[in-house]
Length: 70
Image (tube, rainbow, N blue to C red):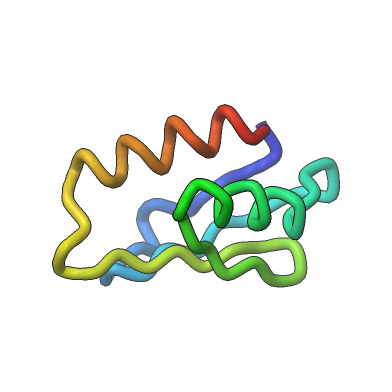
């Protein structure tokens, strides 16, 4: 809830998320950082970038931690 992504616009390993004002972006970033997950929060959005060593299990972990933080 409060986060959306235009999946059709994703062309690379960079994913931009739209975040509405109900989500405290900086707090979310801090909580995820404490779990070893770094995100780049911005004004009403976030940039997520995967790297070569990021696999499906890593993405699943991000989703799980993200849900726990919200």
